[in-house]
Image (cartoon, rainbow, N blue to C red; front, top):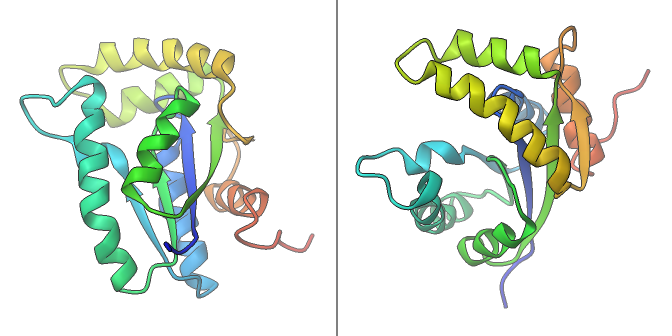
Length: 178
């Protein structure tokens, strides 16, 4: 029998702040002494030639390889950043992380904000594609509604407050006192 593994997927369009919020959420969990692993899953698919659309097969093969290492080292929860366009993708998470109990948070922000973030962080040759994909993906995710809850990560919100709200709504940390 496999152990129960709470998995929190931080989803959202390009530029919604998935990686930044993942990092801050990991810091908040560490501060609260919550044993966990945090992985930006996009980095588990970076290679050429590409392995399937958006590196999907490679991501989950790599996740299946690294999760047991994290679990053996004491991680009891898994926090990941990755776009989820369809709930059918969750079967791949469950194969890679036996016992996974998955909650999906979708970060939202105005399209112009997300595109500005993409422009800032991706100044290279694929910038225009990323900016265009940000708006396209925002629409896909808005229609798909695969998340369990959404958290606004637009202009003016502090990353610590956003990460704390994500963790609180997922039931991983108590909400901060007012």
